[in-house]
Length: 488
Image (cartoon, rainbow, N blue to C red; front, side):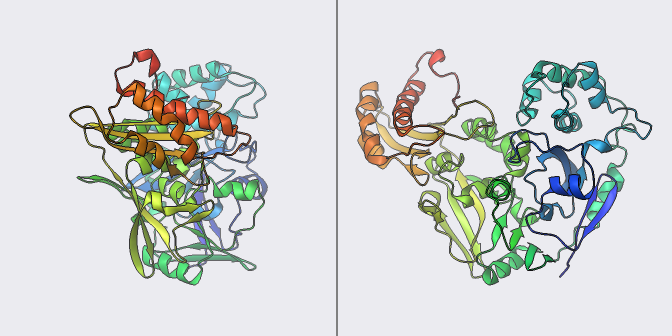
């Protein structure tokens, strides 16, 4: 047992033996360390003004990722390297090439968002020496500028990719070996409990320790990426105690591509899952590209999205349509349930006291299966779904519907299958007439609510129209009718 969280901040070793479980990295940087280059904007992971890099050891190598400091809890930083904008320039004041490119290309006006853009571009610069325009835009999805416009910032990214200095100039490249050694020294397999009054931050040393802790603390809040839980604190001002952090547990970081499907550990982030899922199930890759910005995808996990049980979570509808299952574990052992059965009602999941999500199993669709996902939002990038629908279709040799699974989020208190619609389609020829006739069955499956994202009438009509869109896409409709598998 240990009582200290340790990490590296820029070049300094940090040790914290008193810490509230909801203390954010942003407050640590600005209030405690006076590193005010990192800004507070939205406080919910949307604007990117608070962007920093966090380096961690993955599969034996040191990898840096952009994250939102405003919703990243300090308790999740043990054994990592936090890098802020202050660390980029040389001691003599010479700007880093990324910073200089922003100056040369006039990528800043008021300057408030600039440090966050610089850190996002720096993360891209470290990981991708020759990014395409699309890759640059993807890296900047999570950064908002209200005055400069994005064209000068994109030009800065293009300029710096053409002018890469030697590794000895870059502060992270020239210290990579030293930082790696220092982080390896912090990777001890022991449980950490840090107290502040009666509040406790807990980092289990192993999966077995996690099970024991949750057996004793069944009401503890489990935090993986904090992309949703962070907003409970910054927006709802909720007090969470104790908080159990799991993102450091290597047992939960595995993503295995087996013979029948993916096994995705509960700690696997969207970013780490993207390449494998996009290669095997392209529609899921397209969907992941539209979940938050790059910072959110670097923090958020598929397991957390499932465990949280939100009715507007993006991954449950397609995973339900694919027939996914969730493996739960407690001190008593594991059990597996179908994902569609895991969601019971709003705010309630089939997770017994002391249980946690260990992994999610996602079967591969067969080669003859038609599968599509549609995320409907007010803006294309970095927006919460009004409706998210997924369709899984298998036809027999005669062109009749042999199997169909339709699942929606945003239409009920939980992600839910359209069982009545499915029953209307099974065994019938896959024709426009069949699809049109089944539209009204949505009224029996869903009674959506009206909120600020969409009205109930809009949601219901959208679900019905998506069935027709799916039919058109799977029946050889002209290309202009099926521009995106994931729809804006």
